Image 1 (cartoon, rainbow over the protein chains, first blue to last red):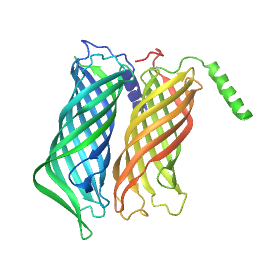
Image 2: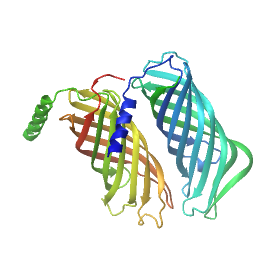
Image 3: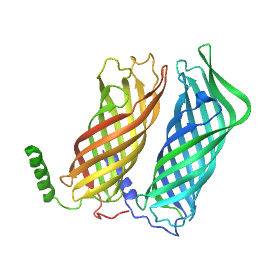
Image 4: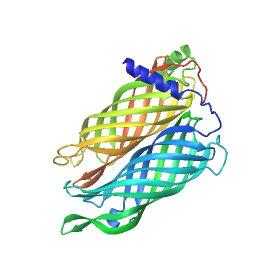
Amino acid sequence: MKLVFAFFLFCTTVCAQQLNLRKGEGGLFSLGVRSTLSGFSGSNALSSGTGFGLGGQFRIQPAKMVNTDWFFDYITENAGDLANRTDYHIGWSVLYYPILKPAAFARPYILAGHCFDYTKLEENANRTNYLERWSSAVQGGIGVHLNLSERLDLSLVGQYMIHLGTDIHEEYENGQVIFHEEKGGTLEGHLLFNASINYKIADLW
Amino acid sequence: MVRGFITVAFLSMIGSCYSQDLIGAGLIKATGSIAPGRMVSQPLRNIYFSGFAEVHTSKKMSLRGDALWYVDGHEKLASNTWRYARNLSVYFGAFYHFNKNNWDAHIGFQPGVAVVVPSGSVQLNPLVKACPSAAFHVGSTYYVWKYFNFFADVAYTHTYYRGLNTGSVYLGEVLFTAGLGFNINVFQSHGKHR
């Protein structure tokens, strides 16, 4: 009980302090959680679907108009009626603020970055029947921070992520689910929408 | 009607006795309660133990974590195809508050995860799955004293369970919870919007 109280006291002390900037916005460190909607537009129609995911990120802002976003996402979705797909993303994005008004309620930005991902396709009725893949990706998009307070923001992002890797997909043959991994690299893209809550923890430098 | 009026008058009377500015940075709230829920796409009503802990970072903003533990469910129709064996959901996010004196209304958004095991009646040997989820809240709190509050909260949770033999199941649910909450303000500097 003492530990729980001490934890809350610590959180409150950290969270409720006024944010003192040392030399402008450079050095700001934020922590956040996010929900993700993912719409695949791969060549295989059966894999196309809307995924829903959970993730987290931290931000380190190196300069006044530039921020960096380091994220992890866990996304699940249908792969037809008989299989499902799970994606894990880990990556980073650089955020550029074209408008220099850090105190504005809405602060739009452009982002681009890299991502590594792990994908697993699995048959619903037979979990020993699966196919997995590692690949890399690049992403770009636009977003906006809605500054709810000096420390807290709600960020809304729309981005397109292109994966470079071998294409994996499911097919139905004679009532059986068969997973295929194509030979040779291919580009597979999907649209991602994120809504995240971020809290500025400290100004590191 | 009369009973409602008396209740409101009574709460106002208590509130006027403790009309100090309770809501502000440093306010910590926590509670445990029971949350009945109704699934959006299934004719099923569920009951959860629920609890949350919340820290106000300012008068208008707070960070809050919620947990829901499935207790039991009630089928409204015999054709129901879904039933939980277990469900533990945890959420964390931010809330925006509209407050006046001791009244406080809030809206909130929380990403989260539901760790779900379907019942054996849904599928033989079902797997435990971590299902990404998100919760949207709207509710109100009335601070009756510097240590107690009465609250009511309605949440909509958006969740899918993937990987059943029959495909995915949408587990969206509307949950209601209300009751007694506990609060303490560990700071004296109220009302600053940070």
